[in-house]
Length: 164
Picture 1: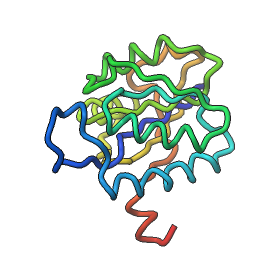
Picture 2: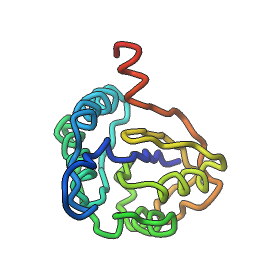
Picture 3: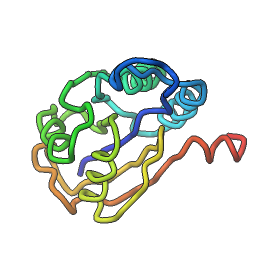
């Protein structure tokens, strides 16, 4: 059984001029990263690998998380930028099976669609939203639609509301 964490990048700054790829995090996004990092660092099974889109907003989010996790590798893969579910699955399928759990960081709508395919249900993934799935697979290359079971779901705004 594998554990997959699916996360959408934190809130980005739409006020900056330039290409979509280069949009950085805004203040709220920068505040959300430590909340998610705190959650991840407290897990019994911390992510061993973060696979991220190289877009600025995803890169900033992933780097912030990786800095809080001691033994976590970080890989930026250009195929994850605005990737559809089949590409997300293909990139995951190439990973070393000893890396478990894996956190995949990217963008909507691909992440929400992939989460629905894997877990069998529709789930809104807001910015900095994080979903954990238990997968009925022994290898990342064996992950298929319908194999996932949602274990938990985290939204930083809820943590902010509850006072952490």
